[in-house]
Length: 336
Image 1 (cartoon, rainbow, N blue to C red):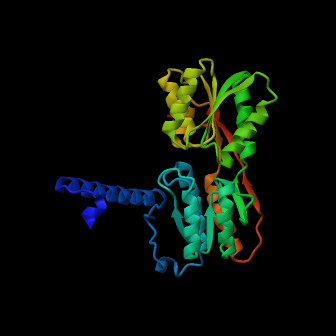
Image 2: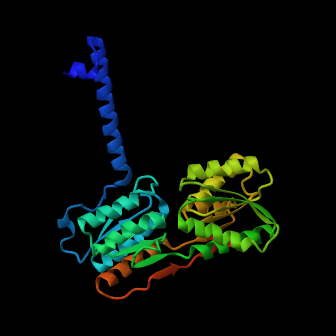
Image 3: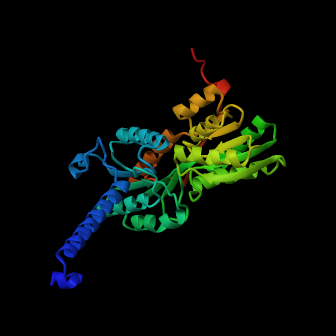
């Protein structure tokens, strides 16, 4: 019967067909395994069984955009501090690499296991609104952090005032270039509202300066390597490019990598985002001229505070925006 199904009469042919089927099964199994690994990150210091949080007030799920991203690690630091102070169990999960579908799956998982509250980036507001609404309909409050989903039934948003931060960056680049610049923009993602708002704020601010021109806008996909690649391509295509704006944490270091590769470090004005150690080191050396500094720890801390208030039956403000400021070389402590 098996032979008839395969339509193969020879022994060698049957063996080859069986080997191909076995290889196909192995390939599918590996694809399923690594697909699972791509969006589920085990929690290294928090047990997953319910006994772990049975004695605490609430079980909260914090969803990150990328597990090892330094910006999200700082959000997690603030959230853990607030969770410990409020005696709540914080379950942190994030994809190992940027994946816009992973938080959506994790919201569904949190709804299925009946956590008490979910804190998540909105990322794609149109895609995320239905899954957020289903969680809220199931009695699980959702707070969006870093990126909002305003059309959803989320309880509140906590994050940077991104549009204003983009205008801040533009004003700083105007100051650095005397209002005459040919600019390349490297942004974390083209389809994420937080980055889109930063870019729009930047474009609206420079509209008043006729000699400030944006030559290209490219996405780094939250990768230093891709940021360097896109910046390098811009430098090759536009030899007169004399300024960069990077909208996400790893864009600044990536831009610096490209400038060094092209021998132009320190000769092109760079405004970056987030005070990562490597970005601050570049500010020290003069390869980055200014940094737009957010407060990710406050975002994490305040989001937990609002969730606890919500679960306690207290009202919370729907929009909670955190400030940004510009960090310049002269504000850095002197190095010995």
